[in-house]
Amino acid sequence: MPRNLIRELQHRAAVSGRPHVTPMPEHQPLATLTLGDFLRCEFPPREMMLAPWLPAKGLAMVFAPRGVGKTHFALGAAYAVASGGRFLRWQAPRPRKVLLIDGEMPAQVLQERLSEIAARSGNGVGVEDQIRILAADLCPRGLPDLSTVEGQRELEPLLGDAELVAVDNISTVCRSGKENEAESWSVTQDWALGQRRVGRTVLSVHHAGKGGEQRGTSRREDVMDSVVRLSQPDDYCAADGARFIVSFTKSRGFAGHDADPFEAELRDGDWTVRDLEDERIVQAAVLASQGMTQKQVAETLGVSGATANRLLKRHRERESGGAVGMG
Image (tube, rainbow, N blue to C red):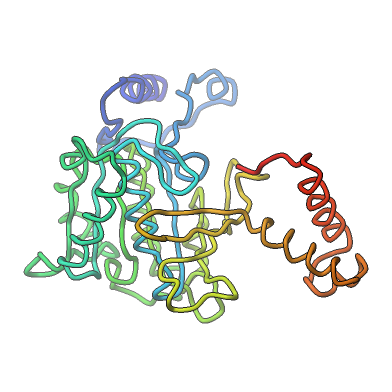
């Protein structure tokens, strides 16, 4: 009966202090609910792993060109989830089990990065058992191909009690089919949706194409809760290291300041973040001090007149001590 199945799943999901990962029964017959029955269902509130963009029982993707910092981002987010710690602007409410699937990095480099994250987090007690690692560099036959049913079955016994599965990256773990064809993504998408159904979150790391968008079929974004794009600032130079702009190309369930882009930089072992608007405020103020009109400021910065007016107003507020700090 559909109601019995729903009650059972709700009961399992409501068990506190335990991973909310429950195998679904195979060959469950399809069933429908009336609108009335559906509206009377008592679903547990959706939890967040890193609010607002990484939900429990959700799907997310981060993409960027080569060398921008995708792996820095994915490892930092995964470690925060595992430790109940913080990454960039986001705080994990509690520790959760994590499986890291790395199909690209040499094991030594991966070890170095995780050691650095653990050292600077100051929150390493007990985290060793929270994270399990499946690295292609340590697998004699390489990682299973998640774009095949056979590869997914090979991975299944290793998922265990993981609540977050971080896959770095799609091109090395999903190797069959053509990247720019939607049909080739179908098998992997079915696997990701299956993980969500049993209570896991999947964070996928992907490359950007030449145009700056995620590489290959846009169908990958259809089922995602959040899609994060990392890009280099206009004034970036190689000496800056890991420094990128974080922006959302998809933000299901959140908007406003939570969805605003910001800049992140790994400096002297610590991450620093700042709003992009901060830089624009400074630029607008400098241009205005040089005698430019509001219209000229807007044209120089490539923004609307209303935006230029807001930037200059924010500058005046800060100068007079009336500004409200940006979180």
